[in-house]
Length: 136
Length: 136
Length: 136
Image (cartoon, rainbow over all chains, first blue to last red; front, side, top):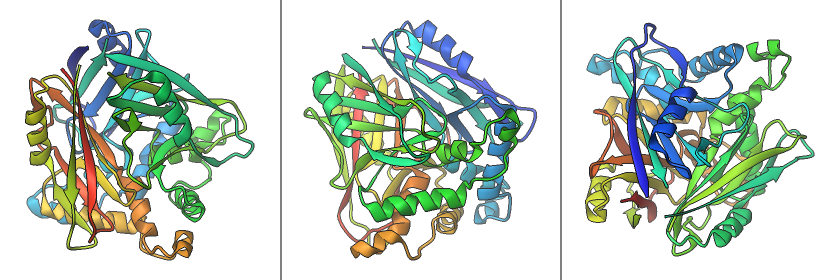
C-alpha cells in the first residue's frame, strides 16, 4: 500500500468563493504515482465545504443562492462567542466538507461533468484542504 | 492491498426513481474477494444521489417530498444553458452522491436497517455508479 | 496494509443528543497502530448522524434548531408503519451519517476546530457507530 498527503492552501479575497480544484487534485494524484485507490479531499475548517458538481457559472450562483436560502445569514447563538459566522457553519454541514474521488488506472475516475469544488463561506484568511491518496 | 472496480448502469423509465442497490453492492464485494476494507459507492453524475437509509416505501416517498420541498423544481440560472434540471443538481448536493460501506469478514458491515439507494433525479438516460473496493 | 475495526456504543437518555467522540476516535487510532491512512466513522442506524464541526455549545444548539427547521417533526407517510420518527430519518440524511478522518503520522489530521460528533435523533436505545481504520 502507498499513501501520499498534500495540502491545498486558500486565501480568498471575498467572504464567499467557489473554486474549481479538480486540476490541483489531478496534479497531486500524478505526484503520488498511485494507480488504483481513493483520494480524500477534505476541508480542514468548519466554515468551508468540498463538493462535486458542474463547472457552470449559472449553477454555481444557483448553489450559492440555495445555500443562503436554507442556511441564511442571521442571528445565531454561536454569535455570543463573538463570532458572526453561524451561517457558514450550517452551509458547511449542508454541502459537506469532504469527498472521496476514486482512482482507476492512474486517473481520477469521475463522470464527464464531475468537477471538484472548494466552497469558501468565511474567507479572507488562510485556510486549507487536506488531500490524502491511498492505494497502490 | 487489493482493489476491485465495477460500474452499475441505470436507465430509469421515470425522471425520478429510488433504487435499492444493496444486493448489487454485495455481489461486487463477493467478486472482489476482499475481507477487510472499504467500498466506495459513488454516482458519476451530478443529478443523481447515493445514500443509505431504510427500504420502506412510505419513507422513500417522504424523502422524495422532502427533497422537492428543500430543492424544488423552478427557474434557475443554470437553465440559461438550455438545461431544465437545476433542481436535480441541488437534490444531488442535499442527499449526497456517495457513501463508503465498511467491509468486515467479507461482508458489508451495515446496521440492520441500512440499505444503499441510488436516487435518480434526472433519468430516462444511461447513467452509472462506480463501486470501488479497497482492502485485503 | 493494516486494518482495524471497532464499535462505539451509545444509549442516550434523551431523544436527541450531540456527543463529541473525537477522543474515542483518537483512542481507537492508537490501538490500531496505523500511521498513514483513513478512518471511517459511520453510524449503523438510519436515525443518527456523524459529522465534523465545532465543539461550541451555542453552535450545537443552532445546529439542532436548524435541523428541526429543515426536517421538522411532523406527520410522515413512514408513520403508517407504526413508527413516529420520520423526521429523524430526514435529519440523518441532511447532516450525513459518516465521515472519513485522515490519519497522518499516527494522528487524526484534523483542523484546529474540527471535532467529530455523534448526533442522536431517536435515542433512548442502544445504538452504535462503526470505526474502521485502513492504512499502514
